Amino acid sequence: MKLPFREGTFDLVFSQALLEHVPNPFLAVEEMRRVAKPGGTVWAGMAFMRPVHAVPSHYFNATTWGIQELFKNMEILSATWFGELSFTIDWVFQVSGVAEGMDQGEYTTLMETIKSLDRHVSHEALREIASGVAVLARKPLQPSELS
Image (cartoon, rainbow, N blue to C red; front, side, top):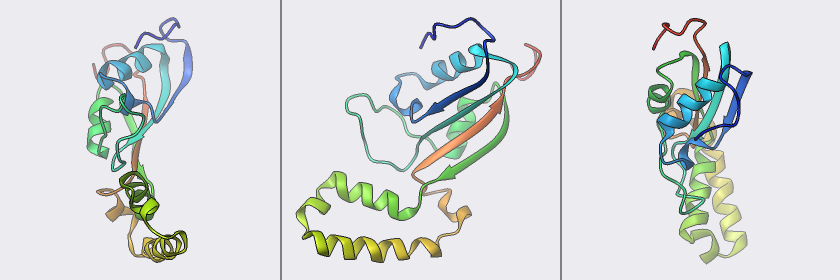
């Protein structure tokens, strides 16, 4: 929550699968903003429809609207979502023990069927069921912008 870098050090700050694992993601985002140069960019991705992982340090998942709220003090260049429906279902099956309880061949056949459904889910529809979300944001050039 306190990066060992001076304010305004980096042109790009990259955070993958971190924000769901910190107790205060708003503070973590502010720290990313602090170490970015004015006009610098921050890319961050985090879990949305993913099961609990990295216990006991899994605190928050976010929708695209949630990750935009985290970055509201920056200029949001894009917000997106990712992860096929089958990826999320497979992870749920793995965590819940369904996969372990099934014959491997039967599970493989089940997942092939589920994966075949991915083509029926548009990217827009995936927004509400995606496994993860991401934002690309720009630190304002002037301290007064967006603060």
